[in-house]
Image 1 (cartoon, rainbow, N blue to C red):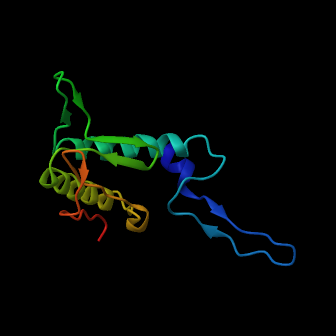
Image 2 (tube, rainbow, N blue to C red):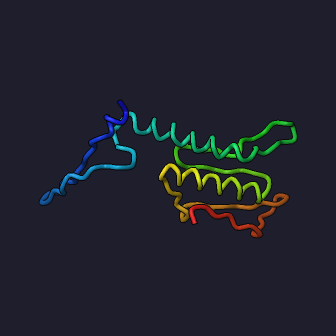
Length: 129
C-alpha cells in the first residue's frame, strides 16, 4: 500500500510565464504529505539503532549510561568518551547512511574533542569523506 502511494508521484513548477514539464519524484519528503515524515523518522531510527550497536554510551559516575547518539529528525549528536570509539561510530553511521542511499553534509557537520574539560585538536573526526 505504501509503495503504491509513492509510486507515481510527479511535480512541476509553475511561474507567471513558464511551467516546467512534469518530473517524477524519486527521493525526499513530500511537503504536506502526512506519511512521509513518519516513514523518514522510522527509517532514520533503524539507522541510529544499527549505529548504536557498535559502541556503548557514556557511563556517568552514578552508574547511569547516556546513549551515544541523540537525534531530532535528521540532526544527530554523538557523545562518546574516546576518540577511537567515536571514529568507529562515525564509520558505522556513514556505512548505514550510504546503505539507505542518503548522504551526510560534511560542511554542516562539526566535531569537538574535549580532554579533562579542555578543548583538544589532536583528533580529526570525518564522515561522508
